[in-house]
Amino acid sequence: MNVPYQAVLLVSFGGPEGMDDVAPFLQNVLKGRRVSPGRLEEVAHHYEIFRGVSPINEQNRQLLSALQRELGSQGLTLPLYCGNRNWHPFLADTVRQMSLDGIEKSLAFVTSPYSSYSGCRQYLQDIDRARMEVGPEAPIIHKLRAFYNHPGFVEANADRVKEALSGIPAERRQKVALVFTAHSIPASMAAGCRYVEQLQEVCTLVARRVAHPIWSLAYQSRSGRPEQAWLEPDVGDCLRELKSSGAKDVVIVPVGFVSDHMEVVYDLDVEAMQLCMEIGLNAVRASSAGVHPAFVSMVRELILERVKENSERRFVGTRGPRPDFCPIGCCSAPDSASQPPGTGRSTRA
Image (cartoon, rainbow, N blue to C red; front, top):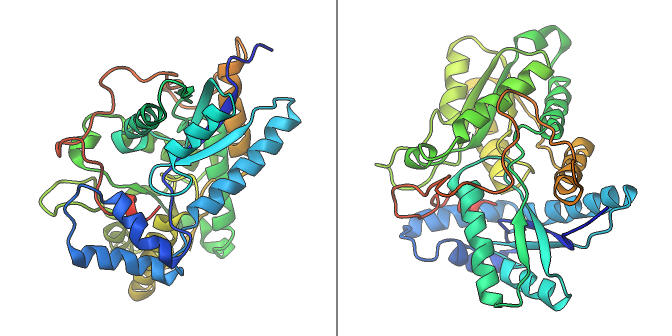
């Protein structure tokens, strides 16, 4: 096997791991943006509920550990690294360490399944900035393709839905409403990518796999200026509409995310569940893919696509696999001059 790449870099958002980290973390995220003190205090309070600890870093460590075992079981020994956009280990620091370790060429797995500016293009920019900061000795880094329609991702989410459905009394399961959720993004950002199309396809594939045709796609964690259009419906509005339509049970599925990080545990486990209690709607939240064996195997397959000639590029649905390298101009920034979404996604990783 000819292996042109010497390492795998997991690229993620990062999050605080204690109350002392929250303020500097938020400063990193909000650098250069106008955010009201009230909004900043509100977001900081979300972390207080969890003692200042975002789950994302530990979940990434678990994913790296599971991936190390998965690669080793297949005889593929590549060192694994992790670098974040907004907290330790920072991406530039990790790229510098990779250079010191003699890594000249690496693959990057970004913890975002879909195509959008904030979920793909911006991470490519982060990698470029980190390499520029390190200098000419920085390794070449190529991102693995978007994986929203990979069978492993669909299977992992379908199994999580089945687990959640088991928490509903058997005689009521056929009428359960599945509510798939994903991060809302500005409408102007959505217009420059296939984010919505990809989400709709994944929802269809997962619902079909669990043989459950009743589903809706809603969005969460909206932020930014009130006058700016973002993707809708909001998950809260969707839940109210389902209740008014006679639904008694819902399963909330965070299909837009790969792990149960802060946006999932706060926006869904706290806010959405509280709303369901208030309106009398029985709700169960499905887990995200996390370290589901099918998801971990998927990452291995994505790596093998790039290191082994003639590897199968698996996908489900009708759109085919995403390209290894993004076309020029795809996933353009929103109207707000390439600023990423505001304090929703950015502060609750």
